[in-house]
Image (cartoon, rainbow, N blue to C red; front, side):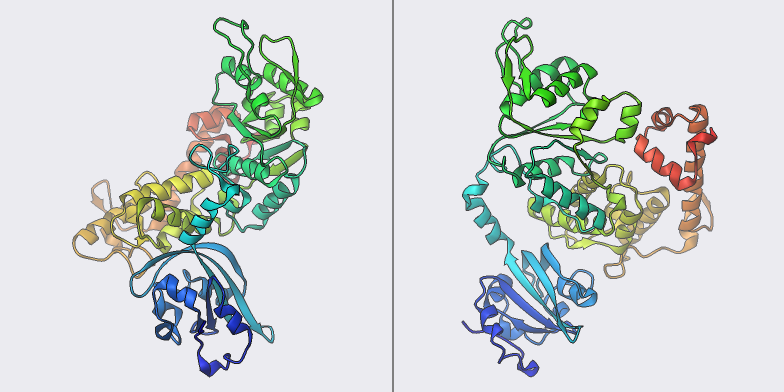
Length: 501
């Protein structure tokens, strides 16, 4: 097979180039300036571009990418590898391409001299996975054991997040109970399913139940099963423990389980036996228990929401999952992933978000975490028209703080009048200061002063709620209609101490 290389760099005599040319993946090599010096035939087929056309051109000349969106240019800048990145791009001739890329810096005398990128066509990869016996479908989607997720589906590069991921992988081979602690939307069920699929029980069933979503009078029968005659209309029916025998049972929001059922769960953990509701026979069960809590477990123990003896048996391995707002680069990384995902689902061609939108994302506290971000991206991409970039005007009004809502309205009006709302991909250009209006009066103000007033008002409302609640955080949170976790976060943010009330 022929290979294509820029002869001026004297790389043609290096033996490894013939190996790269024979790869069944696309390969691109760029020099320190971002100029493409090697481009194999597989990549030519993926892009529908001739090697002779590509060689010698810079990355932005060949692809609709810049320093921030190009993996090669990012790698050259950081000197760090970028592994297994789902990537969506457009060539200079307009072809949209979905790939999985791994990019590595090429160093000479400890200095970055170039970058090499290995590219796998995602559509071909998806077909290979679908044809594999290990990925036989279950109920139309999944791994054939009641799960949809493995560790490869979990995205994040933050140090704290990777530590939690490592602990989850290490514990997957153990029969010991695992408790996952994370706010709503942090991906606790993804972790639970991944632990199951990474361990020796992966061929057996994974069963999960949200203890907070099931009425107390139904939960016991669902978990432990029923015997005929136990109550009017009762039939012999196995519960989730029996159905998960040999596999894994995931108890989501276990701190919402009624105390009488917590006692039955404790008995199982001690004796590895269950008894159906209305039954007289003990049934031996072999199952790995994974549980989760969204609220601080120490607070749940103090409030009597969970038995202490049960907690220590469930939390033999305790894995905290950090919230999205604490993950460095998390919002940017996940935004790219969800844009890629919903491009495929919705048939869109969105390339990314503007710098202004990304700045809002970084400052937002994300009480719904990853789930909230995904739903926001999905909703935005449903209503965006034939555009490549998600801008402020595309975001739902309820998401934007007041000062940005004003900006968006002004920018939308300008766009309707023929003005572009963006300078490149950086987002919305600001209208003149005297265009902002409040209560029908023209006032000179700035986004900063508006934001400052909003923060002051928020602090005032929180302070008032705490005063009226005598410092009881739970009651104050209910008054404000926010979660306890969010109220704790805002109290810390504004320097409000519970003991002062």
